[in-house]
Length: 315
Image (cartoon, rainbow, N blue to C red):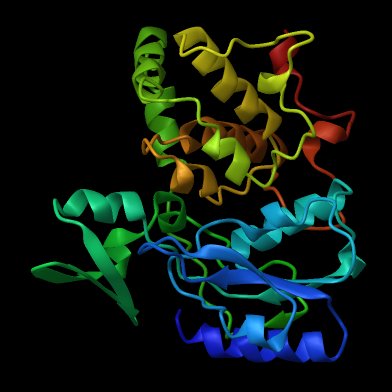
């Protein structure tokens, strides 16, 4: 996907020069491998710092909330779906945006790559479908497919759903993947097994809130975990407080999550946080035929009412 970079720069410079936008939100190289940084470019010089590769996993829609002015933004499939969600929820207006769509073939998982080596990784280079990882005294080339983030491996919306201009040709969507295989595995467990599974899943959580901060859906002025009057959840590492945070945050994302994986990407403990939101995504699809962010013209199921909505849950 590195060949998108030049096209992204060309489009960004043009829309800035034409006055269509005041700035373009994209990525630049980070200070450590596999950690590209969000980048605000308001000039041709700043645009030159922009890059695009398989380390652009953060969801740039997170940086649109309540922004003023005219904004250009680089958007892969999941980003574009969250932009749609932002527009529907009145956090940004569609006519403020110039969306530069990037067809995506998936982002690599830095947790997975770091676990492969016991030495410090100094460089990660991408060439086509090959990723070369190197450091002091070692270098290994691996297929990108083997390094994909789990959400990317099962993504069925790799192309942007909403855009003003594309930075590349549309890619083939994945069809023969089971998006909810991990959810089905948990659903098949007994109640006690589920409790143990999620207890173990959250056992390493340090309550840093990186998952919340990276999520484009978590834009409340004051998060419920930060409220003190009343205090909804304690500040300690008490397991009940940890579970309460993750479960309530997941329910706040119900019908809105695009499975972009930003939460898991930033988690310093490598917790599979998507296990919570994936279940709710599966329920929304099975009950309402709904996937978040696919259309500006359709309201999500949790803020609409239909006489024939399923009602089994109230029996």
